[in-house]
Amino acid sequence: MGNPAAVTPNLDNLCRTEGVSFRHAFCQSPVCTPSRCSFMSGWYPHVRGHRTMFHMMAPDEPVLLRRLREEGYFVWWGGKNDLTPGQDSIEPYCDVRNPTDWPPLRGEIPPDPAWRGSPQGDNYYSFYQGRLDKGPEDFFIDFDWKQVTGALDFINGYDGDKPLCVYLPLHFPHPTYRVEEPWYSIIDRAKVPPRGPTPPGFAGKPGMLKGIYHRQQMQNWSEERFTELRATYLGMCARVDHQYGMIADALKARCMYEDTALFVFSDHGDFTGDYGLVEKTQNTFEDCLTRVPLLIKPPSGIPVKPRISDALVELIDFPATVEALLGIEPRHTHFGRSLLPLIAGERDDHRDAVFCEGGRLHGETHCMEIESNPENNPSDLYWPRQQMQRSEGPEHTKAVMCRTGRYKYVRRLYERDELYDLAADPGEVVNRIDDRQLAPVLAELKERLLTFYLETADVVPHRIDVRN
Image 1 (cartoon, rainbow, N blue to C red):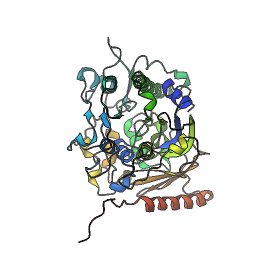
Image 2: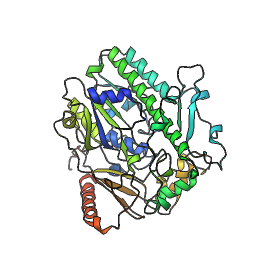
Image 3: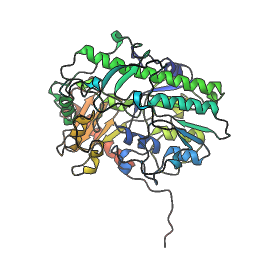
Image 4: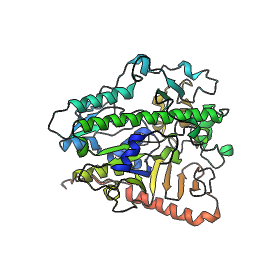
């Protein structure tokens, strides 16, 4: 993709030789759970109100993993959940759920570890930890390594007659920003691209950004410190690339690789210093949060033109592509579109616009995610964002993004809307919502947003009731 500091040889080789990488792939929510609910169902968050971390897939809602299991797949799930409710059984969705606990002495982070420093200091909410001490081990024993080694053990030992689905949602490169050697030092700091600038006074930007900016207390960070944070993040990505290579090698050793479809993507992005911020928000839609990696290698026999595609695509296209590969007829109305024509090189365009959603209405206290930090304790790493989400001011407003190849429009319920010309302003610094020169563009994007909601506002069940 052109990042000179990135070290991802396995994924780079994938799109050079046997797969497609999508330069303009977008998630449908900038936070974990709503995004995962969306890409596992083919529904936008508004279809069933999946807008928070604490509203997951209900038993009557469609989930791709369950459908694959019903179609005869053996489903092995290792890694994060953030998809199905903790009060419900995981059994309908997988045959094996890899244990999610891990050795607490190394992988667990206490509430106030020493690396955070003083609560009044400028590192307390930065999520920056840096180099991990792996001790005498080959790697730092943490959650992701337990899931990767579990997946490797499963692949190497599987002797069943069912086709496999391995679902491996890792934690990295999610904050905190931390990684062990050799990945910590593998990134050339001199090649790390500059971060996106902090907008002067956050004029024209959402109040959520300004509020988090002041609460994270990082205004005095030097560019050298931000570069170090960003290099650590890239080191985390390099570790994920290495782990992907281990999985691919295991599939090859078992003669499974050629018949395997591989999907590599992220549920959302991360600020990593852009706008002077770290982590993410629930209701802002900067490209660093909403544009995500998506790489696909189809099984042998499926036409593929290896390359980087510039088509606009969405993560809800993932389940539609799986259905097309397997010849599965959907049992519910969803809004994904198969990417197979793009993968084959039969076409270069896919969508005229992509969409992302978040936030809440005033009065929706059940959407404040109070459960994350019931006492509103400032010692919580996520407190700067959590406190903003508790406000009944305009900051946590419900909002939606409509993005085309050149323009981005964000409709905000309680705040000023946003409009960006991404060709002239790729960093989305200057909000041109009141610029008369762009009035025709704004009218067109508003019309497109209205059509989007009309097309996707509800779904009629495929079950036909008997009239009595």
